[in-house]
Image 1 (cartoon, helix red, strand yellow):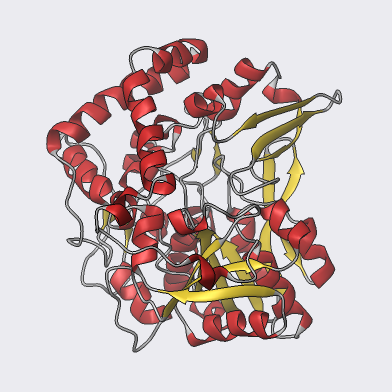
Image 2: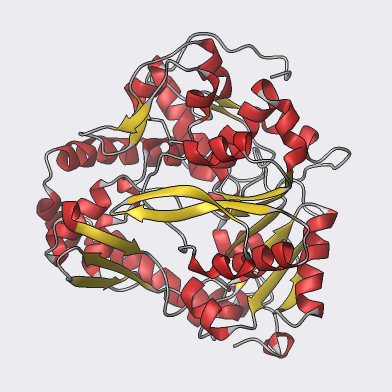
Amino acid sequence: MNDGKSITGDLSGVIASGMCIGCGACEMADGSVRVSLDPTRLIFQPETPGGLDAATVCPAVRVDYAGLQSWLFPGAEPGSHGVVRSVHLSQSTDEGRNLRASSGGLIKEVLRSMLSADRIDGVIALDHVEGLEFASRLVTDPDDVDSLPGSIYHNLRQTSALELLRDTPGRLAIVGIPCQLEGMWQWVRTKAPHLRDKVVLTVGLLCGWQYSHHSIAAMGQYLGFDPAEIDDIAYRGGGPVGKLTVTTRGGGAFSASRRVDFGYQVAFDRHFNTTRCHVCVNHSNFLADLVVGDAWLPSTVFTRTGVSLVVCRTALAEEVLAGLVTDGRCVSIEVGPEEIRESQTDRVVFGEFAYAYADHLRALGGHVPDLHGPNEGHGTPKPRRQVAKFHRELVRKQALMAARRYRYLKWRKATLELRPYVTRYVRWFAVRILRIKSLSGQRREIPRERFSGFR
């Protein structure tokens, strides 16, 4: 890296703290490192600490956001949301594709369009292997894009994407979550810069955090399936919020509403996130050309099939989106960056909790990644008392997870944590349905008439 800071040591701190996110950059940079599923934490992390080469590319050690943005978007000036040319609300006009995706269907429309127009030779994206295992594969036929799964929320080993990038000739598009792209670009920039020209377009997700495999194990207890017998798993589909759906090798089928199922709310609360998620400042995916995620806005509550919030960071991203509209493959309206804030909240977009929690961990003497994004200083860090309380709860709950005491965690949510649980739904109803911010003059919602053509 060339940001004026030096990295020393290895991945010992990452392993001890459980901060690995499984991007695989360390494996590509250091042949002595192997990432595998830790049997207690149920996250992927290095088996050995490796050396300086591994530490240099690891997003759980440091991310040079300023240097990477300058390298990826030369001449562009990052603002509080990173480099932004325009922001849009968009939706695929293919209702079936949209329903399967839940969040607007834009990613698959983009990939199909790029392949059909011969602007790329292939797409590197996640596909299902078996059980809980997913790995990146190369897609070269536009008709194969729809066979790819939607968002996967449990922690994965992502090395396969980097191996495909290294070994596949031609022009490529890559789909990834923020920390995955952080590891990829740090590895490419420092160890394989010749690969930069292969990547025509990166499509990034607005990230809702990764979860350890404890989430799936807990749902197994709540719904009555054995995680070892899972044949397939899907987290979205069937509407804007969608369901978690699990099928087992014996033909069993289990599902839970992501919005109202109480067990799901327990198993997928933020204490089940991978540890690094709690200090992540990059949920808006600063390093992707085209960023897509759910538009959680009062103005989009009416939708039956989901609306995508789309952030274009390059001229190519804008051109691709405009082409989809011209071809009738999507409907889209341009909005302002304030819709990113409203959809994702300042807590997430500006890292109000993450920066404060990182400071708390440093004060405790623990390993903390060096993460300073373009959003730093634009929000109000959460009070130390709040993050200290969260940390105590996290340590306690991680111990309960390690002991597989998932039913106790459910009881705890229904009793000790009932008030904040109910408060969250009350807040959601007030903001999204009653539009309290509009009524109080804090913001102005997008008029319904602008959504002509949306479902």
